[in-house]
Length: 186
Length: 215
Image 1 (cartoon, rainbow over the protein chains, first blue to last red):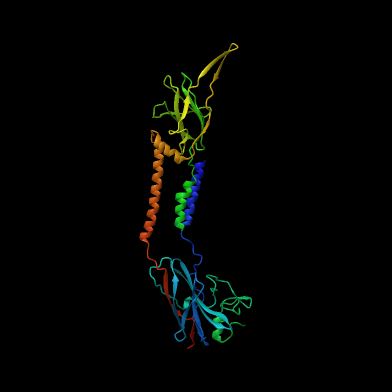
Image 2: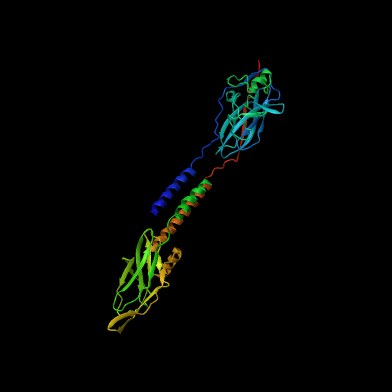
């Protein structure tokens, strides 16, 4: 009987080993954002449009360069390897001391065992999301969570919540800025 | 870290759960009765069952022990040893393993054997009735040694071993050596085949802005 008990424990141990030695699931995998679209034609280009890149595992973003003439965004960020990292680029403006996110690009990069010390991250207009944004100011990911403005929870890319129930992106923060209206107020 | 947990589990936790104690032997010292075989009995218990209970005995001044396998009896295990005529003292000890090979459990040892002496029969005649009284002998209950390492050491040093415990010691040492070599080899392999992974990766970022001007 005791031998059976020892065999049972050994079997359990092997199971434990199989579990503990297996590959870890990555709860942070996001993949590229494939929400609606885009590079909006903007009648009122915000002169103070800025961009930052966030990476999972760190709390401080890195500034990117927004070229207002060529309508491009570029820069570079050093990311610690050894695991999969989520990367989020925010475009934003500051109004009334509020950081208003206008658009985002989200991606997941596998840096577990990088073959090179430089990996390019090139995105295009289809990767940009204007209507669905996540709050990455504390950590990643918080997709679907609204942000709070004046103690009212609102979508991050639609702070006045004017897009509620519509697929129209002209009511988003970016749509309203381009239209010359106030994204903080209806 | 996970790998370390695996190794600790495989090589240390699982073996630690196994029973390694030998049988417990409870024995009342035997006495020699003239012209009769020496009877040595003992209660020997182990939860995994008792294997190869044996009395090792010698008549002083002999130095080598002879083996006498014990048989199951009503009260435990027993053996009858035919002694040479006139034998007055016998040194002996009892050893037994369990069915998993743990042991030996001992009563006495090669280094400190038990002594069986002649029990003198005194015939007393009184009231027409013959009464046999016996000179009282030492009657200590002896418990088996429980430290397997100590027992094995003594076995190696003192008795003409037939290979039983030596085999187990050899197997144990072999397993430890192989396990150590495997663990060492694993880490050596990991060390020498590791790839130089950069701790930081530089990620140049490039793409359009979310807005463009109107034509």
